[in-house]
Amino acid sequence: MAKVTDRLNIHLADWNLLYTKLHHYHWYVTGPNFLALHAKFEELYDYAGTSLDEVAERILAIGGKPISTMKQYLDQTMLTEGGKEKSPEEMLEQTIKDFQTVVGSMRETAKLADEAGDGVTTDMLNGHMAELQKQVWMLTAIAKGLPVKA
Image (tube, rainbow, N blue to C red; front, side, top):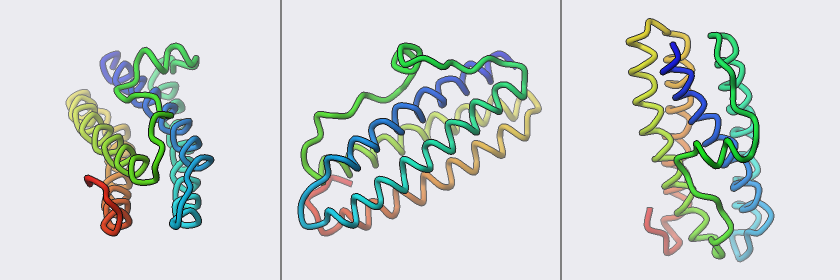
């Protein structure tokens, strides 16, 4: 089970970074699509906040210890910090890429959890993957009218 909790800590780090990054986008988005993107980024950081708590509680429930410091999050995340994305297009593009990266990583963790007989963790990850895939579809649809490489 240690391999599963180690992988879940990576997801915890990713969710924490996404929470901060999406907050940044929410605060700094500008332009003609401001209202829609401002609201969308808020929806997404709320989801990230709920998800990070769910992952941390799952780690505890299966006997692990969730990481809990910014240093640990930055050391373990598979993502990069935000802040260099200046345009709404760059913010959308990076969010799509981040979600795709997280889905790929979760797929690997779900396999490990399944092999360990931990169907509850697999179910949780499948739910997160389904939601992120839906969000990638929605963000790509938003980006269609913008010069975004989606």
